[in-house]
Length: 70
Image (cartoon, rainbow, N blue to C red; front, top):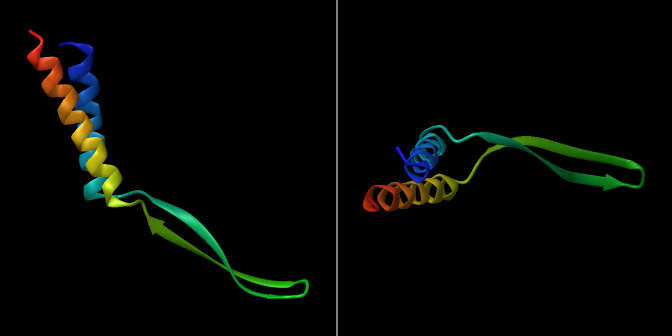
C-alpha cells in the first residue's frame, strides 16, 4: 500500500469517528460580574459535525488518488 492510501484510510476512519461519536470540549462563559464577584458556567460541548465531514472527504480523496496512480 502507498502512503496516500494509508493516510487517507486513517483520515476517513477519524472522520467516521467524529461523525458517530463527536469528542467534547469544555467551554467557560462568564454569566455575572459585579465588581470583584464573578460567576461563570462551564459546559461541555460536542465538536462540530462538519469537522468529521471534512476529514472523511479528505480521506476519500487521498484514497482515490492513491489507488488511481497504479
